[in-house]
Amino acid sequence: MNKSVKIFMSFIGVNDAGDLIGRKDGAILTALKNDQFDEVVLLWNDNVNSNIEFGKVAKYLKKEILSRKLADKVNLVKLNIKDVTDHNEIYKQLKQFCDNLNKGPQFSYIAAISSGTPAMQVCWILLAESGDFSETNHLQLIKVLDPRFGISKNIPVKIDTSLPQIVRLKSELVNLKKELIPVANISITKAQLKIGNEIIPLSPIELSYYKYFAERVINGKGSEKFSGFNTSNEFLKRIIEIHREIFPDLDSNRFEIENILKKGIGLSIYTFRGNISKLNNKIKSVIKNDLVANNFIIKAEGRRGAKFYGIKAPAEKFVIEK
Image (cartoon, rainbow, N blue to C red; front, side, top):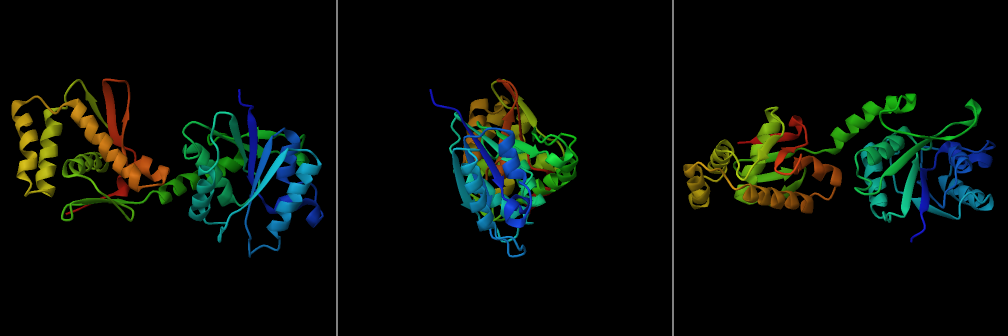
């Protein structure tokens, strides 16, 4: 059986300079004294707007951690963040770093949010709460209670906690999620779906499906329930209308589904699911950011045989151009 490995991660902040600036231990060393970890990963970058040399702080922390035997292994990781207040820049680099971590079941990751800028703290929260860190390995968050305010301890943090710091950052998190999600543009004249700057190569029937579900979002109808062995005739009728609107010259492509509509039996649910699956895979293959892709795929939720299909992105993230 593989040995469980507990890994501590944190940005390095000004408060972590400790003896280098004539102060007591900062949040990182305090957290490591409060609990036992197998490995430590410290993220740092040069900040031209600070008089602190974070490269020296990183080396100081590594030396202190190993000499005090607070962990067996310390990794120092330099990130090239130009603006430590820019959520988008920080999040992109933080996620890229975390994507390369071993997420096997024997590893547990704990991120401390007490060090670094407020924007860095928000990005840790977003990474954990959005599920972007891993679908199978949860990222735990902790806040370090300063010894000045009582016995120090590492406090587990969740977005719905009443901790004043997290409540203050919650609105920032919501806004950041919105900023990170681009706009999906469905062009009738160009017959294409474009998410942000990326064109998704959908087939005519797939694009018709996507416009159908995008219209539901725009019109505030939300997800739609599909059950049984066939879709409704209303769904099939609207798909044909959209197909004719976007691809007026492709009459032969509509022949089969128009015949199905005439029979009044609806579209096979297996054909429907197959088209949804192919559509989603094309979005995921082009959009490499999981947060963005998960907002724009057509998701299925609910029990087997009766599922609700819909797109998560809000109405303001969709534009349909004639």
